[in-house]
Amino acid sequence: MHKLVVANYKMNGDKKFFVSVAKKINKTKAKDTKIVLCPPFVYLPFLKIKNKNVYLGAQDMSQVQNGKSTGKVSPTMLKEFGTEYVIVGHSEIRCNGETEQTIKQKIKLAIDNQLVPIVCVGEKDKSSGLEELSSQIQSILDAAAQGDNVVIAYVPVWSIGTGELPTVTKINKAVQVIKKQIKDKKLNASILYGGSVNEQNCTELLKSKIDGFLLGGVSLKVDKFLQIVKVVDNV
Ligand code: PGA
Image (cartoon, rainbow, N blue to C red; front, side):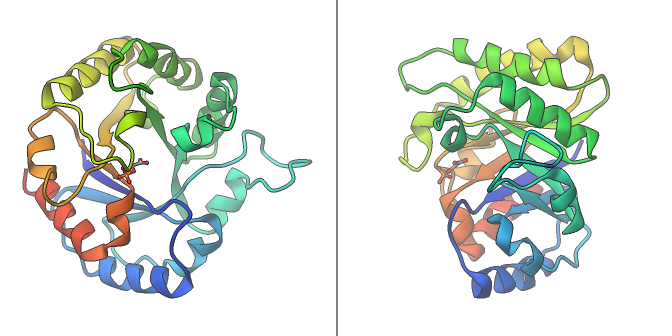
């Protein structure tokens, strides 16, 4: 099992930024941590990856292979630019009316096209328990087959960009819920945490039983991003 750090740049950056990100990140030395960079679609070709630990990912994709889907990007198109991972079900997409059915289709289509889905799950409110997770995890179980590679990112919606963090105990509970539910399926799954992670809190968060992070805002500061990669790699 590899450790993993995923950068979700969201709708940020420009051509110059991503060219320089690739140059800096290509120099990274990591023992057993994979780095996945997810820029906006149009910048995928500008991230020239020359490091065996670094991979390209997309922030979303269409749930259908091709055809009448204005504005969407297909897995085949992503693959053409060297993409190997795709984020599915991020709350910033779920909130636009994306259903579990659509998320299931995307996970299945990603796997069918040899893309590893990074599926985001997590509760909306800070005061909620982890009940919302079970239907989100069920989508993964419905879409994936035994032995498939998947990444499951526990990203509580209330912690995204707010500076608010769940306790290590709560993260461990989420990891436990995920592991218990996927156990019989024997997936090859890595479990990440995402939401307000930075170079200062990452060491504490890594006391939980996660395999790495999904990073949003801090990904835009490449030096801090690489500091976090180093901490993950040394755990
Ligand atoms: P954040 O975003 O790190 O900026 O909180 C995380 C995410 O949206 O996955």
